[in-house]
Length: 40
Length: 528
Image (cartoon, rainbow over all chains, first blue to last red; front, side, top):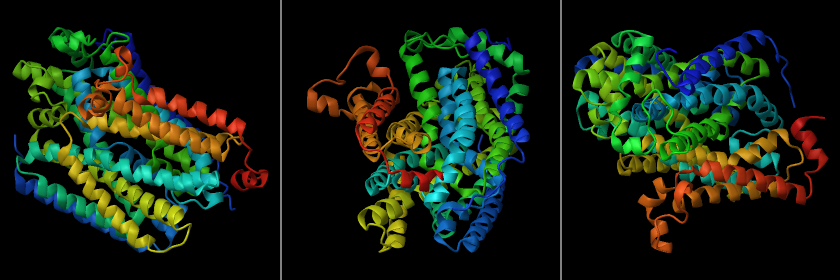
């Protein structure tokens, strides 16, 4: 896959992209959560 | 190919002027201690995300680890994955939010202070400060090397003076503008880094005929792996090394786990969480942080490995050979020979930005660790005394040590020295940091014990067992008459694998045996 024979490598390659996309999705979904400012 | 100096000079000058302006902006906005130490706790989420990423990723990640990927191959992508999942996602979502809240409640302005106040111990704060002040110069030194290597190959000049001027400029805006200046300049530097790395990836894939074609070409030249590396378990640049072989241990334990996990307990990064107003900012920061890190380490490791194809096609040799055996020179060599001249200028700036953004935070953290944490809170018991002067002197001295180290350290050291510092931080700070945020039963004694066990077992393993450091240091040889105290696989297992679990175990056992922290203090930390 992707010109890489070892699944241990192409898996890492693909997971890198997926995890970055995951960060984007999380950030977008929680865009307005946690707004309240806590004072001590 | 040497770049025309006037073009580079003008570009660098414009860049420096903008940096100077941002530094001045930081200076103007800094009125109170909180501004200087934690940017007034009001930082914009995107500035936070890019600043965090730009600090996290230094020239050492790009040049040193990219070079390591040139030698070891794409297995390093597991580190890129760790960087995103642990270094960004886990750090922001799980650690960041609690760090911000507890830091605010306890009025902490540095990472050691957060730990010290959470456990009501000046010793913890002082010892952590001293540890940072002593060992962070090693990390700052190699960041300097990373930048200097590029200047060395690009401009083909003696770089000593340039390095010193660079150091003075960074020190100037850190000392005057504090963390606000650091984070503003980081944001600009981060944007440059993003652009530079994106272009580097695009150029590389286009030059090599496409994504799949480039990877395939790299897979096809696996037979070129030198015999010495083959004997160590190297199976090619698109394959993981043989499970359990010395190269596998180096890759997995030192590089992937050491740096991948160590990032959580990095003082200069953890303090960032205390710079924003609310959790929303941390959520939004993820949106930028994840893709940013992918573009940094993901690209550096892929391009580093792929440079083998380029050098083989052009010179008939693999990257390590083309770089004269020094892996730290692989990326600079590759950029200089494979990229268009204009890009070399841009990348030069990328690396300058990467070095400066990490250095500025290191200087800030080293200075406050010694001036605020060690001197004011530990030695003077909270009295102001000469704190400001001590902090300034501390910054100057630690910078000097970093520069001296940059000249003294051996070749191919960048990735290893980064791993040493990250590992030491993980072993010393991670158990009590995790406990501080998530385990109310953890006691002051448990925290102190874990910190001492983590720090000393990590150093002990480094000097007496882990062959990569123990052999060149020679301390084990001098005292015990043998190069390393243990033999076999142990000598390639990174300190972090041994010291961090040991420190966690100590934290749990000692905490359960000692008196819990008073409920009232816990309410101060966590709210009712």
